Length: 244
Image 1 (cartoon, one colour):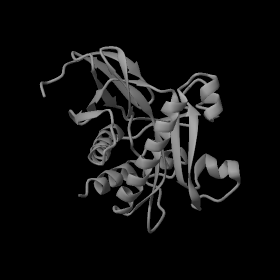
Image 2 (cartoon, helix red, strand yellow):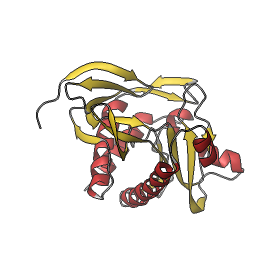
Image 3 (tube, helix red, strand yellow):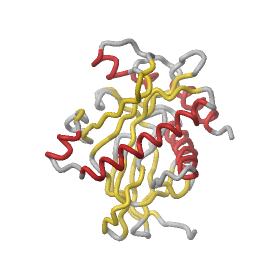
């Protein structure tokens, strides 16, 4: 593949910057060290988070691609940059839960760490301004956020991704408590071709990852809850996912 040249910044979020390239079908995703929690009410910096998240995501995307999951990942360019396919992101975040934790525990009044009888899948409207409110299929249809056909595909894909990653992390001594996923339509030269791909990232920023033996939290909850050892937790996740 010929070297892709970065052109200009087209979007900056809480954890990443997206750049256009000289190929209209490809973008560069840059991973930042900044960290936020509670809808950006809490802000900070996690040293080398961007470097570790780029490496972790690259490994996981490659793993999923090998199992037939289509993603936006093309290649990791350097420590902080990833070459990705251009997507039109669907404004519906998917959260897949295997074990009770976080807001689910609060809403249902149950202790964190309880395994769920069945996998729980939740939808959230992707809006920083509104705090990413929880929605359901009726909201999605009423507000034309996505089509029923696309939501069916996304649901099936999210559950399949979860099954693969539960095994992937289990083999590395980690419990996948929950994870957030984003999807988008593949765009070629600004035209939507209909194919839905997994986008964004899969890292300790958007997943709860606990050590199987000790239940030590190895994710962004260490930052959210002032538990300390945040950088060390991200480094540990990288070291474990690097195992063949």
